[in-house]
Image (cartoon, rainbow, N blue to C red):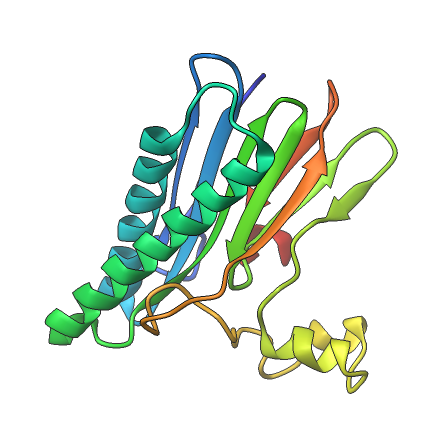
Length: 200
């Protein structure tokens, strides 16, 4: 298995609020976590770093050889739930971080499957020789408008609320995590990224 990762702050902001970590398991398989912070320059960066560190730590500590994908799913949900508590409590205890939060997309690839958990509008894509398929579904205002037939996908690209998300890590004491499990074959690619990439 091959893992590649890259981040770029772009040409608009002075600071990069994205954070990521990747790793491999000793007995095969791999994992990756990507976050995109929000809530002011300092808050967004703090939120994404806390989330990446918490989720990564839980994945590494919770992994066991021979885990079922149901157990992997539960591990991802508990990891993101723990990260949510940490980000939320940090914001509550520090006035300068009030309102901060972050998106998250985390993937564990194991035994021919990828378990993908996410909150917000950072995404996961499945890529092979035949297709590029978006796996995750954005938790955003424009996605809600698309789902309810009020706007088209084309209209969503220029909608004034296209950057407004409806779920984020750290903005509430409780959180709802979506998890998808997809089969993976040799040569397939799983791409996890923030809106900084897929908008292009």
